[in-house]
Image 1 (cartoon, helix red, strand yellow):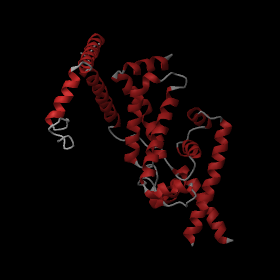
Image 2 (cartoon, helix red, strand yellow):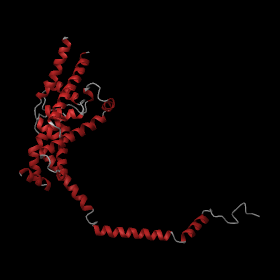
Image 3 (spheres, chains in turn purple, yellow):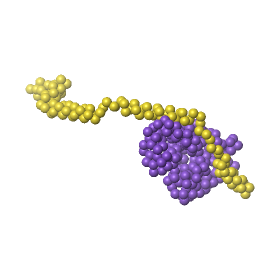
Image 4 (cartoon, chains in turn purple, blue):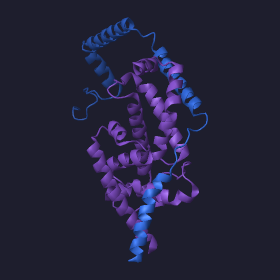
Length: 193
Length: 108
């Protein structure tokens, strides 16, 4: 009932309701965005777009899912939209999409400058390599891996956001990990040579 | 063999590095920036509605009837006999019409 009243207040567009929305969700949304796009400035822009989208689309929210799930979905979609745009702008990224993603990890062709404030300097290099590898995964695996492993959401939460069953989530995570192992193995093998 | 073990270890360490990522706070003034953008969006929406506020359905219907009437009149005017007169005048002015004096082949 409380969530119902809160959604009604959001539909009316009151400053108080949106103030509360931001207090409750700004950190979660920002962390989700930076999990997909590990650059502080880019993640901030995307997170702002998420809340503006909530404001513009609240009248279309039917309440078939929780408000938090809906907001997470918008955050994931906005992040992926950003990544797609940036990946297609880079010529190398375009060639990769033609070749079917079987090109190796190349940190220099990553779609943004790696600048995640939640990562200590000593761990930066490995995380940068990992994020570059995640960028090579098929989208479904990327979403599930990022939400569960980086954004630290439970299987249940990931299942609600992606509207997939828990067994699908487990299967996607297994395949994502296997693909990442292969990509990283190739990367380090080339690096040693 | 050592190289392979080394690479496997590096791969595992890289995969495990994700556990070292800390959650971070939203940037300062994030809430204010977003609320300002929402206010701006709301103002733009209202202004958009205001511009066409006067063009009510009654006025729309009246404008449509006028438009249809004018087109009907124009169509009727153009299908009358004056059309062929206009075409002849036009041809004469630009020397396109055939007369006895103008045609080379009609000269006796």
